[in-house]
Length: 117
Image (cartoon, rainbow, N blue to C red; front, side, top):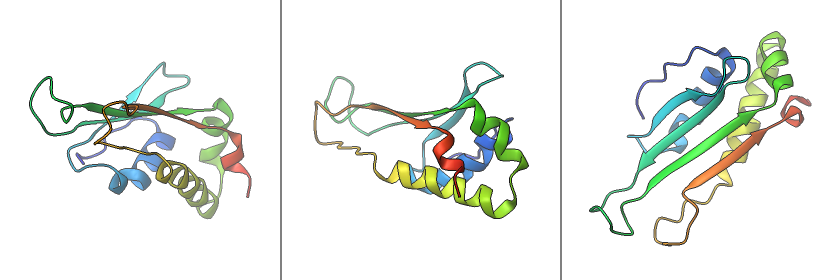
């Protein structure tokens, strides 16, 4: 994965925690409006154009405004637990590269439940 260059501290911390779950060529971007940014990770599988193996994949992490607001004020150990919870949510994503009907865009909603200790 390429180096993570994100402005928003919450997105940066979460992306750093998730970085090893995605292919090394994946791009990480901050998308959306500044007041409620999202994290987007994208990559392309190998193969030739117009072939089932050549697919663009992406995961869109949408953050609840409460998470974005409260996370920076949390103690370090709690922030780490929040990142680990998002990581666990990400482990459940199924990237079935062999299935031509697989969903190549997945959405993870990061809501206030990740803040509960």
